[in-house]
Image (cartoon, rainbow, N blue to C red; front, side, top):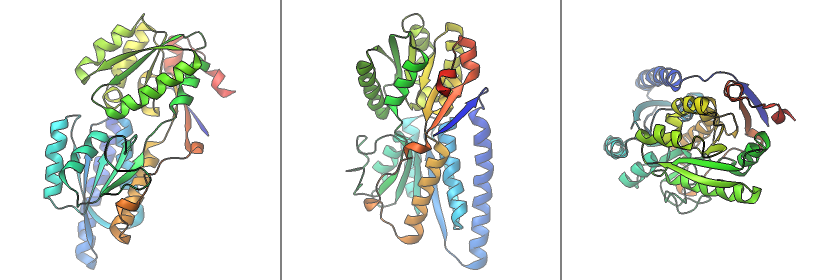
Amino acid sequence: MKSISRRSFVAAGAGTVALGLAACGNSGSSATTAAADGEKSYKIGVLQLTQHAALDAANEGFVAALDASGINYTIDQQNANNDQSACSTIASKLVGDNDDLIYVIATPAAQAVAAATTEIPIVGCAITDYAASGLVADNEKPGGNLTGTSDMNPVDDQIAMLQKVLPEAKHVGMLYCTAESNSLLQIEMAEAACDKAGLTHERFTVSSSNEVQSVVESMIGKVDAGYSPTDNTIAAAAAQVGQICKEGKLPFVTGEENMCMGMGICTLSIDYTELGKMAGEMAVKILTEGADPADMAIESESGDQLKVIKNEEMAEALGIDLSVLDA
């Protein structure tokens, strides 16, 4: 298990700029190479739900895997800006373009594309539970045209980490967006873990990004600590949440690394870049080897790939000692 300590949060935009440059370069070079040597050039569409560091990393990892494979390809990068209607519109566009494969990042993006085609292969990433979200018949044997990698995080271990770092905390606020089905799944897991640990809990929900500030402010003074899963709406507002938490002295344990660096004190995190690479490798097998998504089990990172993440800057601002995590 890796341990990483960071004192500053790098904005998601920087990763997006890098990704945009990489994607444009690949699109041009792929088309040129294909024209020169006669090899097949694959058309790949990408639908990313919104811009935040974890999803950007999943996108970058996917592109890196395509590059590493040596295939020729053009790529159409689309971002829905966390708008479900935009997801549907973009999904229809990608299907209409007759892409060879569509990469979907986050559950709402996957649901939109799955509703638009049962023929074009779809590979997903940053989706917690494909079967529970209705995307596949079974996570071990999907049975349709969609497969991918799961970002199911170690919720039980994260709650145990919260209790270890904050032994005086008794009441935990659960922050998530009701529009994200996989967030509810993780919240239920977190509540069960709290029950087992003897911690009480209370839900604080938002239905859109417009409600994040008021809901987080309402948590101040009501709970001893907060927990937020891998929720895209909360992740996109992590810097905003972090500022409120600093001012209100509210410590958060989050579902993944990038959220932690924006608003949390610590977490046990998966690596979204690696998840994206795994998804990219699955896509290459589908495109070049004729692999069938119906028979490709949903993949996830192993336990030894998880990373202990510490946001020392936030912990210092809140007067919390994270050295207990070094033991």
